[in-house]
Structure formats: C-alpha cells, structure tokens
Length: 164
Picture 1: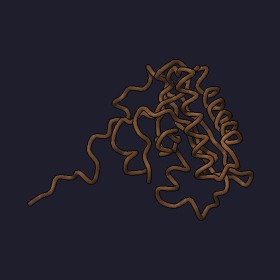
Picture 2 (picture 1 turned 90 degrees about the vertical axis):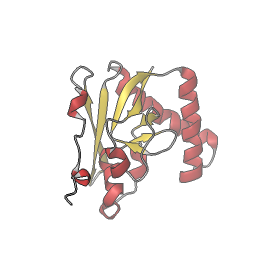
Picture 3 (picture 1 turned 90 degrees about the horizontal axis):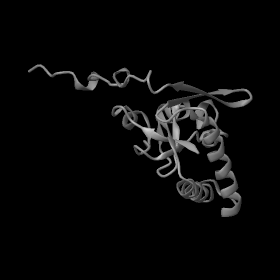
Picture 4 (picture 1 turned 180 degrees about the vertical axis):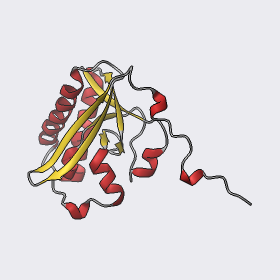
C-alpha cells in the first residue's frame, strides 16, 4: 500500500503555514478541516493551508508537497490511531471507534490517490470554495520530471544584501 509523506524543498512552508508539517510525516489531504469554512475564514496563513496544504498525521500541520511512498500496515494503523484521537480531541467525535472509522476512510482515500503513482512521485493539492462546498484538485509531478532545482528558491526578498 502506498501513502505520501511530507517533503520540503526549501523553508517556504515554515513561512506560509501557521503550523508547518514535519518533513517525512505521513500526510492526508485533510480537507475536512475546512468543511465549515466561508470566505471570511480564508485570510492570511489560514488561506494558504486551505488553498494548498496537505495535512500531516502527527503534527496536523500543513505542507505544500508530498511524495508517494510505500507504507507498512503497522504504520498505517498507527496513523489511523493518531488521526482518531485528533478527531475526538479537536472535532469532538463521540468515540474512538467512530473516529477510527473516519480516520480509516481518510487514509483509504489518500491511498487510492497514491495507488497508481510510483514511489517519489510528488503530489500537490489545490482547493477552492464553491457554492457546493470545498472542491479539491490534485496535481501529479512525476519523479523524473521533478527536477529539484525547479523548487529550489535562490534567495528571497528578505535576504537582500544590506548596503552600509
């Protein structure tokens, strides 16, 4: 079975997301976090998490890119448990049993998304708010196409040399 792990090419996620995911943690889309959002919620860093963030299953932080990777059953069970606790603690799920079902569905959806892709394929997500609710679109960047330099950020405005 395949799932996807958070991957970082530069520091940008630490700047754009309020709570960035940790490199290497297993991720799901996490669109459920936005199910009751309206335009008023889509400001600042929250907007970035909504628009392009995958959700890490340990930190529940967000990341822009995930890489498809093989996952062992034991690891899958661990993240289902982590997610289930999150659903109880944060979303007030009535019980761990109920929450585990939902967590399993989230993981299965993510596995389905990763199933046809070879390891190291990169995935990105784009969400928009429509009248029918949150719409998610996924983009695939094949491993061989993903020239790492494409993502390397060579300096940024914050790093301008200061003239004395």
